[in-house]
Image (tube, rainbow, N blue to C red; front, side, top):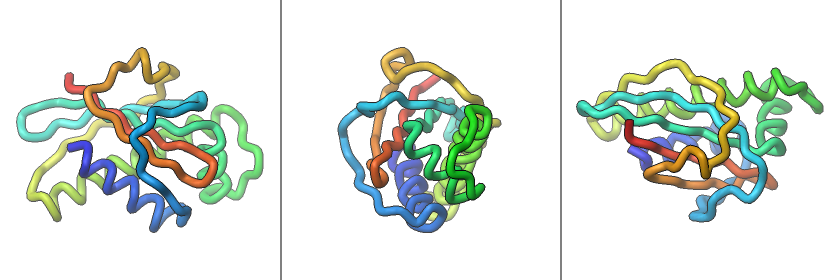
Length: 139
C-alpha cells in the first residue's frame, strides 16, 4: 500500500503543486506536522500519516491560497487537505492501476513526532527546500 501512496504523492508534486521532488530514504530532519487518514483495504486497516515541514506546507498554502504567510490554523487546514488529496488520489490509483479497493476516512491533525508514531513503513520525499513524509502503520 505504501508504494501506491508514494506514487500518488509524486503525482501531487507533478500535477498539483508543480514542484520538483526527490524520493529519499531518510527520515525528516525538520519539525514536521502530521495528519493521518485511516485506510481499509483487503480486510486490513492501516493509518497513513502525511507529514510536511513548515516550509513545505507554507509553500503549498502559497500555491493553493496565494498566502505568503499563513497562520497556524490555515497551515493545519492545508495539511489536512494535502493529506486528503494524496490519499484520495491513492484510492483512485489503487482501483485503476492495481485493481485494489480502498475505503478512506476523514483526515485528522496530530502533533506527534515521527518517533511517537512508530510506523511500520516510511518514505520521504524532498520537495524544493521542504520535506514530505509518508508513514504507514497497521492497526
